[in-house]
Image (cartoon, rainbow, N blue to C red; front, side, top):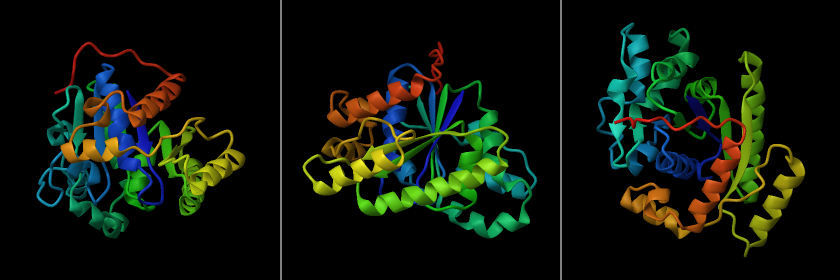
Length: 266
């Protein structure tokens, strides 16, 4: 089982779109895939028509169980997405309270990792969507994964968020026993604008070894797929944005390519 975390300390850079796009592709390629929402805003949860304000069982339940010294089966929290082979562990607004509780709980940074370890025989890939700020939720997501994907909108302000994210990564690596592979993914690229072209040039000059060599273009397909609650790869496999994410996924899988499992998680 591979766990990939998608994070950046800036909002609006395409984190949730990246999670849903890669997840939809993985499931369509025959990989059992789980999407995990660790953002109190619940954008990933809302994508699949679940209400973060109304959910009683969510990723918050994992933390609540530890606080109350109870045992919980993470599989009991999983919801269907309507796409075969693609499941969701949703978020609730209660996640926003966790940073205030962190000081009272031991081992708070490993709760997600311990929960996902229990699902290792059910999924080939788990993709984690993060909030755009450093806190107990992002720390959990980084502790649980083997690869970090950092979407960066190709515009100036997003580059500042990238610098903060890479500084956070350095801090997390000091406490990890293993290295954390990471890749920077340029998003919202529009070849017609100077801002996109200039920002991409800066990314290539500043982080040549960490930057994926492709780009995710601006594509109205992402908005249309979101409105329908369907992963872009299922909504329109030929859309240019989907083709770009497929190229990204292929490059990520070149390092370690697990074989699709025979069954499909439900």
